[in-house]
Length: 389
Image (cartoon, rainbow, N blue to C red):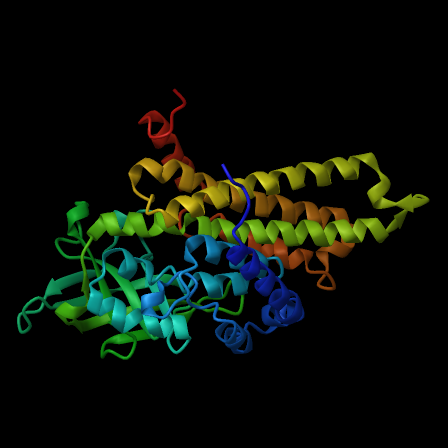
């Protein structure tokens, strides 16, 4: 068992760490304050060839896999959860294509993401169907004029990167919308410029500002057979399973950034004749948080390794869900501790701790809430997918 990263991954980590310290740390607060899309950082990612980390080399990417992307996101999210999301969006919408797409679809849609000439978004959630995927109402009916084509109608909400996307990966019912049969769900690639596609609303969020979360409406949108991805509900689950370590990496990086900032603060803040860091109670809180961060790292890296081996099917769900659950909860705990260690200062915008605190909560909700993850882990133990003898 080898816990060392390869030379290639260590080199990637060092490149991204330098970029994050040099370009992202000075921009994090202004991105949050303005809410404007950070195109300048997108260009930095493009120049550093970070937009195709998860995409195989034959489709224009670097082939660093989920592990490579997780490491990059961890470094970036030490300073900005928003920029971690920007990198995440190179994998979430492309995942279904890489898992179940045709060769033609891969050649058409993946190189643009890797090169940074195109952006995409993943359309799954709906106003009445967030965690309840089978409850979606968006419908794809067969197109009577095009063999193998469909006509798409419905509304998707809370779509990260929806306003910037050039194309969408959309899940919809192919049968009766009231039916909960898993076989009734299909996956489709929809170009944003297709007639009938609109983006009428941008959400106002508590945190993670700078990458829009939007509502996407599909009104009689015609989809050709070349834009249909096979896989159905199973593809939804496999796509999300493979994403668990990538979301976890955002939590891991945020927790590290929050604790590092708070630790430096208490080392220099005088109180009662010494620094805050000299109090044993403070040291214990830092120690407990640091231990949880390292536990989250081990879960996250193991899950990334599993996903890169193609091990994101049912029997591996407990280990994949564990990393997402634990790392996102650690992010909430670490950011809360950071605010507390700074005291009143931690609640003010002069310090990034309140930004970490707001941004961390998102991670326990997106791509499967903490409660959904606990349910999946519990079912895995009950079904002996995770067992110890």
